[in-house]
Amino acid sequence: MTHLTRRNFALALAGTGLTAACGNGIGSRGSETIDARVDSTLGYLYNKYPSTRDLAAKSTGQLVMPLVTEAGFGFGGGYGRGALRVGGVTVDYYSAAKGSFGLQIGAQQYAHVLFFMTDDALMKFRRSSGWAAGADVEYVFNDKAENLRAETTTAAAPVLAVIFGQAGLLLGATLEGVKYTRIIP
Image 1 (cartoon, rainbow, N blue to C red):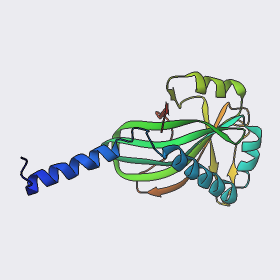
Image 2: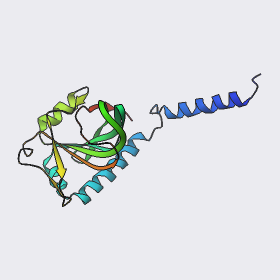
Image 3: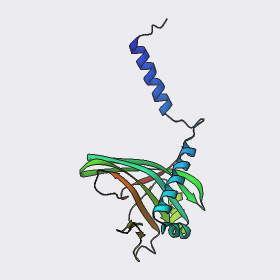
Image 4: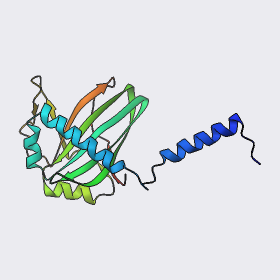
């Protein structure tokens, strides 16, 4: 017969927590949570930066990452989950993972949206087993008037990235080196 001690109780409690954290997908509401966060993020983006509605209308799809968390102390990393929307409908879910090394210290959180401006760019993204942001991405940034603007050189870019809602103390927010991987929430 098993004797219930503080140690056994603590181990059982820890095991229960680990099992609950596994998220095996059975009865999971992960996709509903991600979709709700994506809806909220897009609502915020369109209200705060109305010109992004034009980007969305011209794009063939958007990858929305509602929350990416990064931290670093010499070595750094980041992670977030989001959804790919085509025609306003979620078609897949993705994670974003980032690793870095250098003179860095701190942590930050931000949201970002990748606007796929061509069918070819969207198709390459969806067909890849893991897509890394790099030279194909041009950044749209906000100026002092809180309007997002794209330079004329970015107007023909296959993918436009909008980074917004930064909070924390880690210098810079860039998507270079971020790898996107399809997930099942």
